[in-house]
Length: 165
Image (cartoon, rainbow, N blue to C red):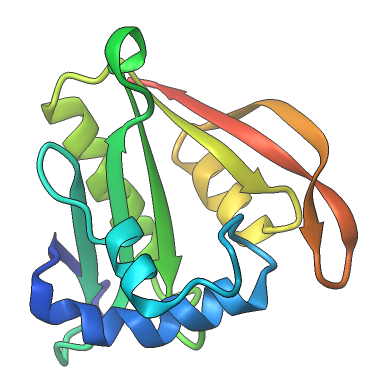
């Protein structure tokens, strides 16, 4: 099966994103989002527009299997560093959607002239994400101990991961 393709998200993609977005957020094991976030709040947080960007990964049959958003990590003097977030639909893990989304985000950041990418809060027990980011050149530059309350592992660290472009 070919890897998913990545394209800019459209408003009509949200109903296909929301089911797995809500499932991932409610699991409360990989994202530091309020697990009680409602759909309008989630849409406002995720479906961001220019100068930021939201994308979707689409499989060969047209199904949305993942999504990402990307933006300047901070405003003003910090605006030369990008950041982003990624979600892949459970059941679609390990099939290239996360890699395609992340590679697309790296290309976007380079094209936009960012000097680096910083992920502020990668849950240390989210080994799939940590391994993916490392394989793409990111490094853990620090871990905030016990900054994330995992539902089964208890208090675990949040990695700050960095890629110089």
